Length: 126
Image (cartoon, rainbow, N blue to C red; front, side, top):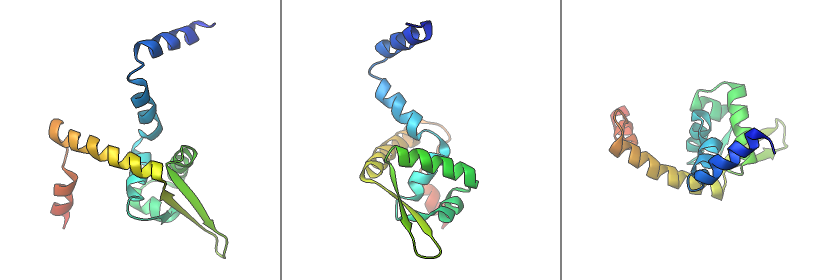
């Protein structure tokens, strides 16, 4: 067994309770993936709509969509009629994750400095 593998096993054993959280954060923990998940909260969107909603570049959005699709957090639907249209929507797994992220958001608003309450921020924009 390699030294790196032994070290990984040691870290895993000592941090077994945190491991599911670490894995979840590694899966959805980039700002682009999170923005896509939140953009899909209300309805399914096409690729260009997701680009506009997040402000991301094509490659950035595409890479994030690939990971989220591979993790079954979003589903991809293709309409074959000309022109071909690709739609993305949250899966049940993704919807459940967003409800948990809402709890994290509330924690951040309550306990972290310089974090805007999303509801208050939205009200200020109107």
